Image (cartoon, rainbow, N blue to C red; front, side, top):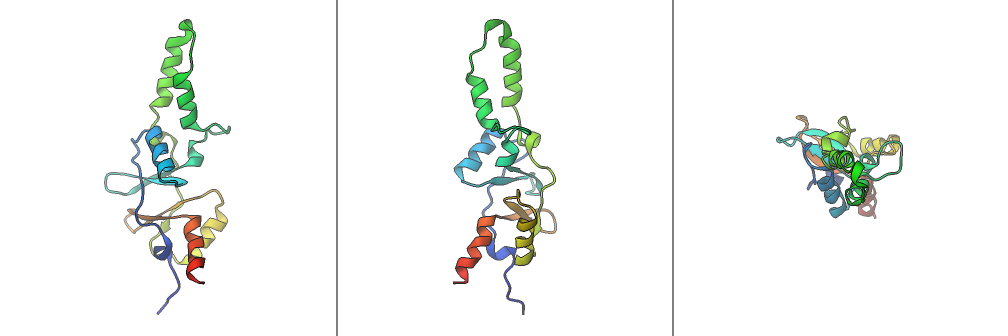
Length: 157
């Protein structure tokens, strides 16, 4: 009988997730509230549709944090002649949904992945964190983070 650990032994089972239609503001609030680096994006059947991470909330090609930028724009005073166009552009940004900025093809691990596979994925994919754990039907059953990998070493003491 194999007693080596698997992803099931270290993953977080109580997953905080969002839907594709969730607002970027709301998703960011969940990420901050739960102190996680990202959340799986799931459909109505809890099947994986993507992942949204803090990295996805950084505007591509800059170091601008999208939710912060949205807030600044909403409160920025604008001269009357430019106000209408500016308000329309700000509204577009405020109306962004998770589906507009998420990674729709995230790295995943199957729920039967051995511990060595988990470590290898984090080693080979430096920016990835967390990794959604899915069953054979693509339903999210957990997430695993670098922190979860490190927890195993405290169990070995």
